[in-house]
Image (cartoon, rainbow, N blue to C red; front, side, top):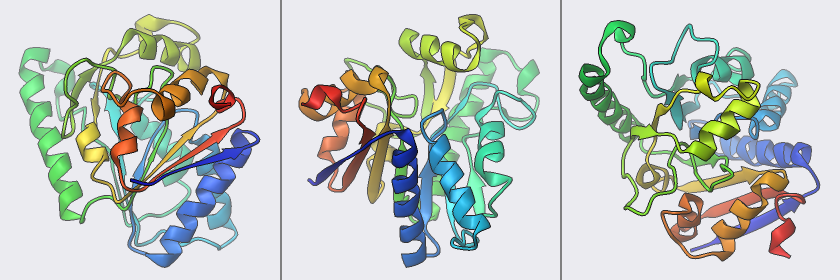
Length: 257
């Protein structure tokens, strides 16, 4: 096991360093398979990648990307979907070889009862994992960190973690956090379910970079690095991976001292 913890001054520096590491990896392996997250934390990373591409310092034309998650029944055409977020932040600016997100909105899903939609989405989850395997697995998986220690939408649980991509129910803390960040505090607008790459699949990546910033992530960082390794803190499981880098700002690192 090898965990590197890098402390930066603020979230801008976290984004700049992370983008530099990713860009260097792409230059070393032009056909890199890259795992990507959504949320506010990676926005500075995506800004820096766009800058590098605009300055002709980065070529992603042979890079394939896979996103961690997508909201239940959301996808292309939904303004608050992760599909839209990723296109606004990255895919509409940088041409990749291919970019994939979990298919959480199959054709006619808006009129299919949930009980009938679940097995359809479970099949989509299996196909997503198969597609990752067909690409040779993920070389670098970038992840953020929830305030409750979740990664992707792998929520704290006393039970064993999910191996593959699966349908998940969002924890109350995650719903509250997302409501405050994206819906002006209105929890009724936050989807209660999502499709997420499982921790088992995330742990299969050859290298993992976790980024976090802000005092609201300080306890989750402490629990992930100093607490017990437990599915109640999904990010703590990263300590079992052979190549993990935590890139965090001073506020997120405050409890480590």
